[in-house]
Length: 230
Image (cartoon, rainbow, N blue to C red; front, side, top):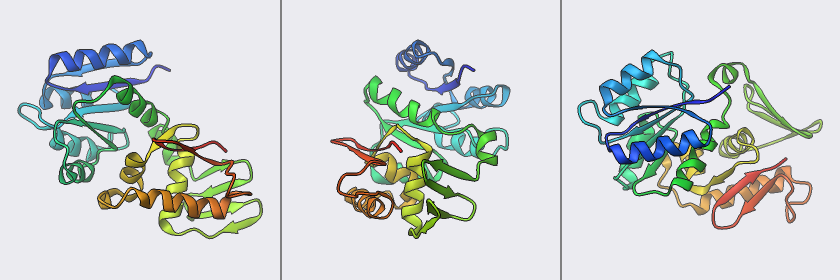
């Protein structure tokens, strides 16, 4: 089934370029030029991803993001925020409003598509509601009980280790940047040092890999981040 994306962006050229690129990738794309019409589109259709500019005329992107998150019909749909702002405070505000990812202008179309693909690999809202475990090989995550098993043995993880492993497994075979991992796992503590991710990856490998010095499950993509292969 074709994935549907709504872009709410008042810069006509940027909106057109993003829409053309996404359509070339096989997505069905709708566009809106302001927050009010964006909300009408969101309410009138079924979408798999929202791409929202923060600086919109009238109803701004942050307010629209909150409205989408507070509506039961759209609450579980991923949101990517676009903005010319790049400070840590702005990122935190965007994330607190309910955004799943945050891209600072100017950005490359390749980076944009990569971020879209990561969000599209997430289970659909209906599937997320019933999914209670993630399984790869002999590794099993009990999402409800927050327990991890390797074979028949339980692996004891800290809360952040569990959240990190769950995020990696949900996006199996996708490369997750350190910034994106910080956003998804640390959330409001986004200002923590990026090396925190590397440290937690090392701890995870020591607990779930057969040979932590030659990891098979979590691979490093140099200069970018990590990928769960399983």
